[in-house]
Image (tube, rainbow, N blue to C red; front, top):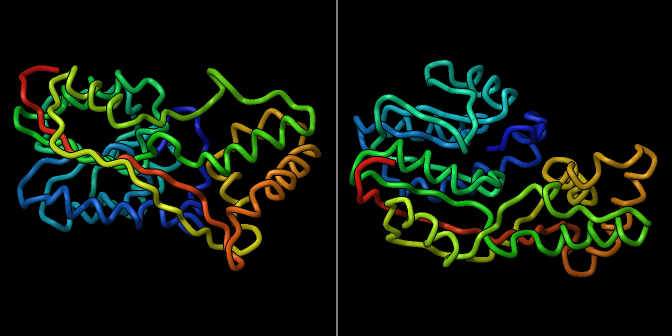
Length: 261
């Protein structure tokens, strides 16, 4: 569930942030994997959803850009094939009936290249089913972190250093249809997501998902930035002892309607 270059703590991912793949179980019902189908799980992470697809009787391959994620997935599910590759540049000799992706494509800034790879990997009539961060995703908690950097005199993270791609419906629909994927359903919706770990919930989220906003700072300055970000976010994001991250998700179903990539 990552773009090349992003480092992941797989233990933290599978403990405090297991909701990432657990929420993804909801779109497995939309995928409706069938026995004998060939399916690609794009951004498979530690393989939990890949295994659910396999349980439906499909022949599934998991792909992830993080070597750590792939290693953990192979250890957990040795009966499933997992491949270390970039979501923006992959090819398979045999096409798939479906490409499935959960919580991955917002990490892939080269979005058009990813769509080209997805389209090229599908059979004609094959389906693309995905959910990932959409326009406005995590605006509150990231805004608080940006504001904390600014308040403490550190240049904001912008441009190439900004790690995500959060498209809206029109933008992503146009991108898919430009490459022969006809959109049959697309939704952009709010999904405020509670964090485990009580008072530490937001800082663990920053550690896991927003390390780019801290890694350039001296070690002794990171704590000050995080503490200031927590202070700024607390009024809206800390409710009854639990931190809530203001997720917004883009849910997509599309069908390949032309031959070729």
